[in-house]
Image (cartoon, rainbow, N blue to C red):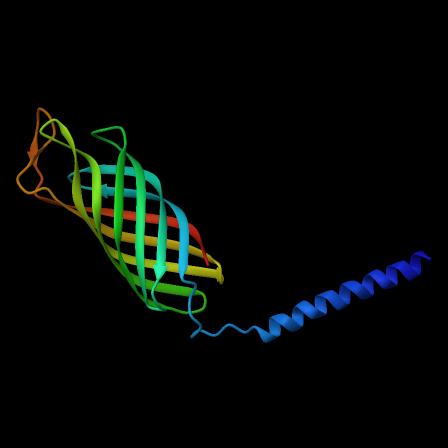
Length: 186
């Protein structure tokens, strides 16, 4: 009796798995297939600049891929700067453009936005920011993305004074920001 039950169970399992293998062989993915339209993910990052110091934090990202080469890319970050207010917010909204294969993507990015951790004349203010850089994405499968960003976050201060007793005119600052994140594509 046990022997017959084991044979029936093994036969059912073999039939089920052979059906899955047959489906997988019919669904080949080519490099020219359209990428998923939406990406959502999270990341950790560090930002460092000569004039503004260093900070680290976490954030979220949303991308809408217009086609295989161009995507509308947005990011909101929350971080802890080493000077100034105890928290900061950054929002960047722009375009990434480049090339991808089945398992790897390389893109350039340009994203204008804002940062809010600056105190000018004893008031916290939002400042224009521009992120220019590159993105490398790794696709372990169709719905998962591992992403590395590196960019120059440019913040123009003009002739405004930044700081308290030892205020300084920063002009335009350049800050290296690196992100490491994971996301899903659908």
